Amino acid sequence: MIIKILGSGCKKCVTLGENAKAAAAAAGKAAEIVKVTDIAQIAAYGVMSTPGLVVDEKVVSTGKVLSAEEIGKLL
Amino acid sequence: MSIFGWMNDQFLRMTWLNDLVGQGVAGIGLDPASRLGGSVQFFVYDVVKIFLLLSVLIFAISYVRSHFPPERTRAILGGRSGLGANVLAALLGTLTPFCSCSSIPLFIGFTAAGLPLAITFSFLISSPLVDLASVILLASIFNWPIALAYVAVGLVVAVIGGTVIGKLGMENQVADFVRTVPVSGNVETMARTQRLAYARDQVIEIIHRVWLYVLIGVGIGAAIHNWIPQDTITALLGQDKWWAVPLATAVGIPMYADIFGTLPIAEALVGKGVGLGTVLAFMMAVTALSLPSMIMLKRVVRMPLLLTFICVVSAGILTIGFAFNEITHWFI
Image 1 (tube, rainbow over the protein chains, first blue to last red):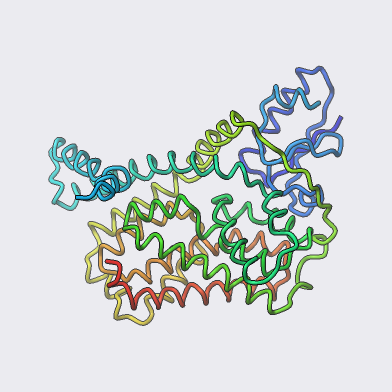
Image 2: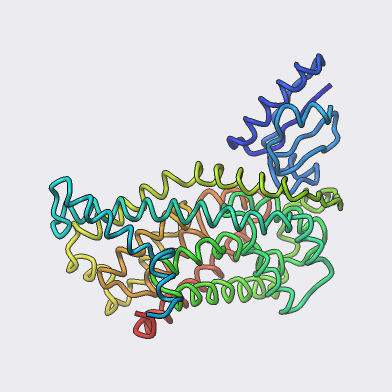
């Protein structure tokens, strides 16, 4: 699966990316983490508060740094 | 002394803290009346006070704000127009994030949903300019009339600025991709425990982001407070100098700092006899306009609209600066 982190490179986005990586590993799934930093691309997902989390092109969370456990439930 | 006055002194102004720090400074062999002792006292007192107040305020405000995610704000503003809508947008702007960098996704989201530029810009101007935390800090550092006056003029700039930009009919000056952005309507709801956790996380995150600006701001404030002679300051920024307000605005515009970093500088400048209008102009210029936020905004609007935005806001700030310098004696 492809997990995208939407955000302009702030610290929150980095943390969210690490949590997503940990969550995928814990769930035993092969996941590619992609960071989307371009404002136009972020906007294209209709996201208004960063960081956003996109799993297989579906926005699952916005404006929150979810923990690895919380992301695990969404995968 | 009235109960309100007493509570104001103890909790907002924290006069006890200043006394305590003064005793501490004397305790380590420095005279608080001396330059070095005075600087140390100003620095320690201001840093502790600002961080204490910030933590409490951000927690409380974030809890309130968790009820107003951007999607909900957009839904509230959708389909409205006219002056009332501008006022509402400016008011909602006071509840949103402290950082002008988070305004851009909001701008895109609002515009994509078909909100008029007038309303979006009222929101965009008020969002970094006025927020509840800065109001209470202003009341702590100066007094309540100044804090309320700051809110009032900040909202006026936002409402008038948005209205003017709306009247100019520059809807075609928005980057094309903005119009094609999908609009998702779902508003995430939170349980009470989630709101508390959100508020706690916001405190950690915002303190983490602003602590350096606050230290730098207080450092500059302490330097002005104790080391730069009053004559030098008033020669540059004195109330009798016509260029004081434009100079403060011009210096403030490219700077990027949170309002919390500018407050200690403002405090020290007013202490040196600089006009209230000059100081307010500086604070507003720093927070409402900054190079990083303009670079971001350039991605979503075309140059004429960006320049209009900068001119309208600058004109508003200058007007407020000149006006407040005329009436400083009402407040201090």
